[in-house]
Amino acid sequence: MNEPAPRRVRDRQVLLAAAAVVLGVGALALLALLVPPVGDVLRRAPVVVVGLVVVTLAVLIGSIRASLGRR
Image (cartoon, rainbow, N blue to C red; front, side, top):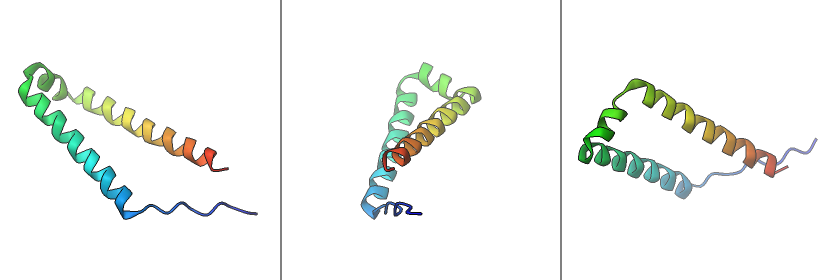
């Protein structure tokens, strides 16, 4: 049973991903401050929950596609 070797994640990739997340959150926070209606929408709990579900699904789909692509 030949299983593919696990892909090694490099420190640089992790740092770039973390920096992208931080910049994205910062940009969204700035947008919410500058445009009050956007801030009002983002403060509603269902919007946050739906956003978390969408991001989780995107990550899962991406990881599944990457896994199938390696076979």
